[in-house]
Length: 341
DNA sequence: AAGAGTTTCAACCGCGTTTAC
DNA sequence: TGTAAACGCGGTTGAAACTCT
Image (cartoon, rainbow, N blue to C red; front, side, top):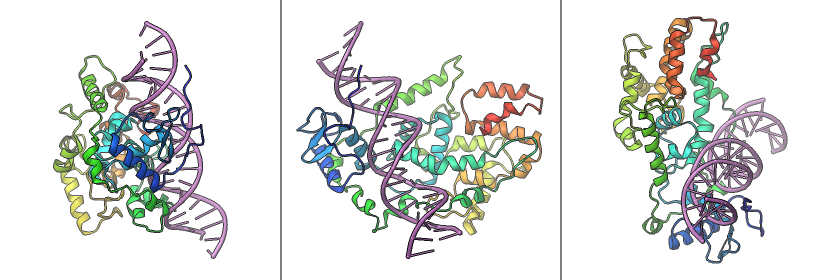
């Protein structure tokens, strides 16, 4: 079956949206509601959107609305809890951005995907150092992350205020409270269904592809994490397997770090929710881990590797655990490389 | 001051899935 | 039940913004 080309015909506009186009689209959706993107315009011509001067295909309209114009979108930097949740969910779900986004109200899959690719994946990759016989690498995560940044744009939050930024003015989300009243932007039922099915799948007997879940079996919604932290996350980090600071549990370690951070933040971050903020659970974990203790002894490292593995990969977790237990041959590093692949 | 290098993110693209007929 | 259209997702692209030399 042939697929109809989307935006290749009749001189439909591509590229960045102007404020006028945003307004037209908003006006239309305010009047008619979301959905039916291909038949969106009153004066549809062959399924393309030509609505009072808006020459965009439906697909483009949908994307613009979902990713930018929706009134319930949260703008600005990701907060530390959001960042932590994304890391955790990504470890659990992989690149299923829409599913991850469903756990972060006001954030779009595209936004999360971009944030992951530009911030978090680098952070994670800095954390995962090369693993070889002869070259144990002790990394300073802060340096690894910060030193790499040479040029480049600032984060969205900071550029938004730049009045010289033509894009920021034309692309400014239209403040439109009335849209909220007339357009219901309810959560995607399909995504909810998917989330539930993932949870259900985890409970299926004999399933080897179990998603990583909290001890309660539920992926905690962001709201509860923001108000209560990530208790089950902390529980795991506080377990006896993960006590890199001697007798200090993870929570105590984090508390100590926050105490230190409140005086002088060694992480180079600030209080704006920046990626380098040292005042989050994850940052404490990443930034202040005693790598030398871990790396300098393979035996010690193996324990930590195993203990942390769920952070990076959830698939085939049991098989890897089994392999870990049965693998006493230190020469076979291939079996451990999955952690840092 | 200019250009190179780097980063960010909005938007595009193609494909799998769902829905409508 | 089969086909076509629409939807939705994840990967990719490229312009703009920024820093460094």
